[in-house]
Every structure is written in structure tokens, then in C-alpha cells.
Length: 448
Length: 109
Image 1 (tube, rainbow over the protein chains, first blue to last red):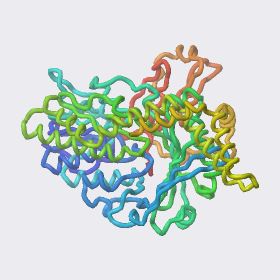
Image 2: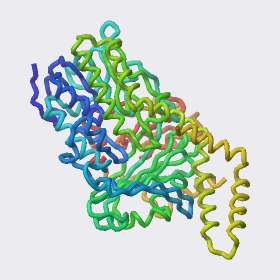
Image 3: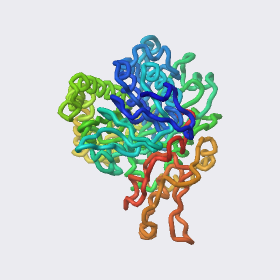
Image 4: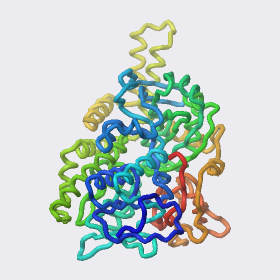
């Protein structure tokens, strides 16, 4: 019996009698949870999606880039309807030192037209729209409700306990999409607490700026967008990076690094943010902008090696809750969406067979293994392990590069070959030759 | 190494806005009845030499009260990132989600 209408419930004081049995319970209305809810409801399953925020999206934070193709795997043509900020036509990579900047980038007219590659989004707006699509597909999305624990019977998960009165809800399968902190997968015993070197802590601000100013400062045509990832002095030797993304009439400005590095160096994230925003290479991009929201969020790190088991009897884990993020390629939203799609597929197959044991549900693991997700996350394990062991790279190499560029480009009546020798000498003074070779080989190996 | 110097400079950002000022723009619905963050053993904090939670928390929820020799917890400004739960070297912080609908309510995300 369904005693609630298919609307988001905004008033937490209103007592809502939930039907106590569904085919699927999805915990969390972020990208992964909403995608799973949407797909399963569309396939005709009876789905409840439980969100702790007052509305879908108000607890959710990401840098701000959503990719067109993976999102179309959930809703084809989504970007025509959804609240997006700007399609990204240019991506820049900056290496900064206290007084210099070395940059690379890619800009293409192909990204400025349909079907586009990526968009900046603001998650509160996007997630609300996305949850509305799940609701329209027939999922029951309820808000203001914390899921506190799993309910077990005979060792298998059969439902969840919510913070509501009479708040036990039962289903054939639970999908944990409760984000990076995933208290639920810990309650389910899938893993213990993450160590501080397996999460990055990022802070972000929304900085208001008139759209003409944005387009002038970032050399954009009307309504086009750009991203800049900023390595080096942005994180003062911690493993991480800063970023600036263009929204319609604001910038998303953020900086993050491994939590263990914040602890080791004794750095306060807001101090780091202020230092980043006032860096001489960055200040002018933000000048006159008004900071209108400050946020903090964790990002799972470590790739496949850090992931919990993603399936158990009666439960699957998706997105950030499963540790799916690939920071070096700025991927996470796509992994959340595609993992949700694969989880939904596994659930549909289990539904057809009427068997929700881990034997059937582990089809999800197989689907993940076959997909780019596990291939990339295995690679990312190597990459992140390498850079954790060599975190000084992020300070050393931008400085050496800036030094070399400064030497080469300073016109000072010195013969070019002397300059090259001088650059090599300075390079070798900071890093022995065998170490340079080892760095290069190691970095290459960790990335391929 | 350069990092030591920059870390030192970090404590005094040139035109730094304090996080307390920034939090005026952040929307919260505070649970007046109970904190969702609990220091399990206050004695432990006295013994903790670095007290890293007072530094890495992005909104300065935790402050060391010298006079009372305890950590005070400003849970009402917590943005629920989870860093303290993982970063406390003694796992001395019980971290829960605020009650449904309470806590931070971002406007942009």
C-alpha cells in the first residue's frame, strides 16, 4: 500500500506512513542513487529513494563538471532539459609556483556544438531536476529522512532502519548510494573506516561574477565555458590541486588535497583557499567577485585498491560510497552514473530470477570489471600510489619547469647552448640524473 | 625546502576572509536539541598533542578551550564533510548525520 503521493516531502514534521515493502531501496539521492532509482522505476520496479537532505541536492557537492556521454547512458538528451551552466570548450592545465605559471590546454570548436563533451553544473539545481525525473519515472523519492542502519534477517540484508517513527522499510535489495562517508556500507560490515590517505578533503566557493566578465576573462563566446586545473603552489606540496570552473554567472573555485597531507602539514583548508584565491596568477580572474557559498567535501582516493566489496547478500554499493573516483582525470560523476546503471542492470536480472543472493547480485561486480570503471580504477590505484610516494613532485617539477622556461625565454644576450647547459646544471643540482630517469619511468608506468 | 616557508606564510593570508564570515552565506537548519558530533572521551583530547581537528576542519568546528582543558564542538556550523571522523588520530569523534532535514542546506553545491 502506498500512502504517500509521489512528491518530495518538504516538511520533516509531517508524519508519513511509508509502505513497508518495496522491490528496491536506494539510499541517497545523489547522482548514483537518483540514476539507479530512475532506471529501476522505469523498468517497472517498485523503488523508494531515501534522502536525508531537505531536498535532493542540498547536501551534495562536487567540483562541477558533468559529462554528456555517461549521463546520456541514463537519460538520453538530458542536457537539453537539465539545468546546466556552460558547455566546456576549453580545458587548461596550470602549473604554478609562487611567482610563475606554466600552462597547457586544449580548446576546440567541436566542444562548442552538439552533442558537447561536458558541462559545468551546480549540483543543488541539477540534482533536484534529476530527482524529479526519477519521480516522474515512478520512483518514490522521500527527503528529510536519515537511513540509520541496515536490517538483517538470517544474515542477509532485507531493508533499512530510518530515523522516522515506524521507519523500518523492507525490500529485496538495498542500493547504498550514500556518498563518500557511506555510513551504511560500514554498518553493513563491508569495510571499516577509511584511513586519512584514502580521502581528499576539498573546499569550494561559488564566486559571483557578471557573465560578460567571465567571458572576457576566460576568452569565451557567450554561454561557453572553461575549466582550469591548477597544480603546484596551489597546494603547497600537498597531493592535490586547485580548480576554477566557469558557471553561467559565477565561478566554482576550489582546492583539495589528501586529508593525511592537511594533517601532516598542519594546514587549514580555508587558509589554503584564501591563499589560492589571492595567488598572483589567480587573483585577477576572481577580482570583484563576491563569494556566495563556501563548501567542504571529501573525495574517495586510492582507486580499486581502496574499494569495499560492492555486493553482498541483499545490497549493492555505487558511486562515491564504493570509492569510485579518478581525481587525476577529474572523473567521479561519470563513475557514479555508470556504476548505478550497472547496478540497476544486475538488480533487474536478480528481479527476473527472484534471487537476490550475493551469487546473483555479484553480476554487478562482473559488469563493473568488464566496463571502463574497474579498468580505470585499477590503473588509478597505481597512479595514486606512485604520486603518494612522490608527493614532492607537485612542488619540485613545476618549479623546475618554470625555472627552465624563465631561463630560456629571458632575452639576455646569452647563447642558447649556454642556457641549455645552465638549465641542465640547475636541474641536476635539484635531482640526481638517475632520480630524474626513475621519476620519468615511474610516472609513465603509473599512468599507463 | 620551500614548503616550510609557504606553510609559514599560510597562517597570514594577504586579504584572507575568515571562514566565520563565509558561513554567513551558508544556510543551516540547526538541530537545537542535540549535536551530531560527539567527542567520546574528552580526556583523550587533553593528551592529544597536535589536536589536528582544530586545524584541518574546514569550518573550525573544533576549538581547544585552554581554560577548561577540553575541545568545544561548534556542531551548528558543521558542513558534514566527514574529515574529523577520519582524521582524528584517536577515532575519538562519533560522527553521525544530523536528523533528517537538519544541518547544512546548500543553495548551489
